[in-house]
Length: 267
Image (cartoon, rainbow, N blue to C red; front, side, top):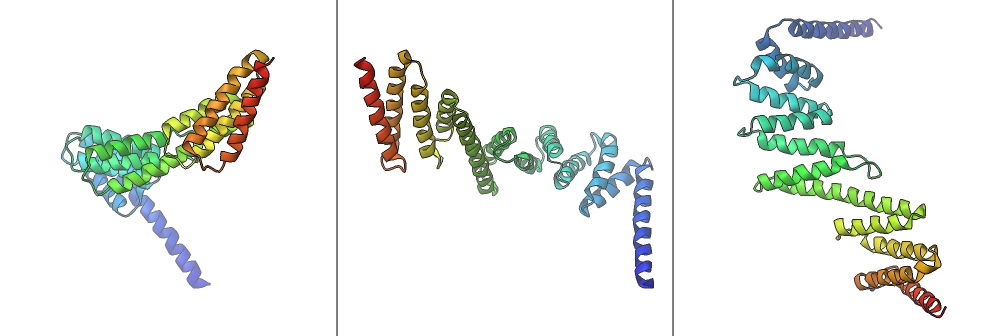
């Protein structure tokens, strides 16, 4: 029991001591000491303290030889502290400011990775995914010999898969809410943007089903035109997926549409 009390007291004393040391450095007004201590915190993984001190000394070192490393560490501390919005911003600032730096390549990559970390689940807005892809591609174009290229491509594939799911989910939502015209447009946009997706078979199926429902719900004077459009969508599906999992249903749908067109033509 006494040993536990002793170690507890020692732990509290150590924390208070560290805090006092940090406060003493922070309020010292000595930029050199703060910079050295910030680097020490950074190397030891104490990123919050490092960020605090870096912020205080950045103005004092602007234009000096230490500024480049200081600002890179500052951006990287935000990244390692999982403050990805800030790290993306500061890595961009670093790359723009120190465009001949040896660290510019790494800063560009970590900027892209920051946006990748900010990319949400596929059902949410994918602006961060689009931004990450843009910067990963910029990195690949700027540094084509980098050993990170394979990693960039994998990240891009992961993001594109998420964006495909988002596009497909949007189309299904329109379909389920009986907004068939918007569903058709959404799935067509998906096919245009992601022609190699594993979901293209499903997307063309939903286009046919949406078109058929749209035709059935149309006023009489528009039905023939819309049944013919559905036949065109059926033909497009069969051309791309003659052995697709929906092929039998699509052929049946096409025959139904042709019968409806004959009835309309016969009055």
